Length: 154
Image 1 (tube, rainbow, N blue to C red):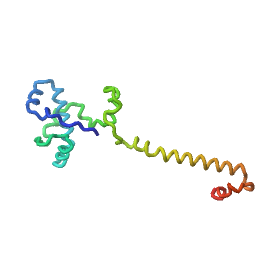
Image 2 (cartoon, rainbow, N blue to C red; image 1 turned 60 degrees about the horizontal axis):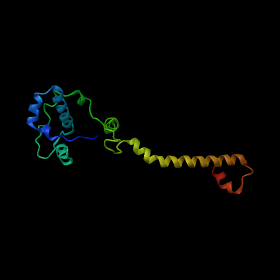
Image 3 (tube, one colour; image 1 turned 135 degrees about the vertical axis):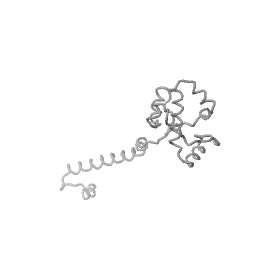
């Protein structure tokens, strides 16, 4: 999940006074954004970690997110926005190949890790099948000396 840091203006009292005079959609959007962070930051350990990684600036007061759930914009009621979705839409709207590139999903990891093993398995299977066909053509009684070791194993 790519988590956007809380902008400084969302923690300003003057900004919230300004939002009171604006349409409700702006206030609901800001409250929804803060609500997302309130779900991520539940305990003091979470708050300290958020400060360390830069989601929240150090020294900012926190009220624990009370009052954030009442007027939430509908965009924030559906949960998280996954990085794979952001990467998909960044091709359309931003004109970039990815928003942020990581291999966090199992699919790309397994594609890159299993491809050599699957290739080797297919090649060995083809070689063994060709050897069995050769033995079947020669017949049990007419096995040539260099095929004898393989005939015993099969």
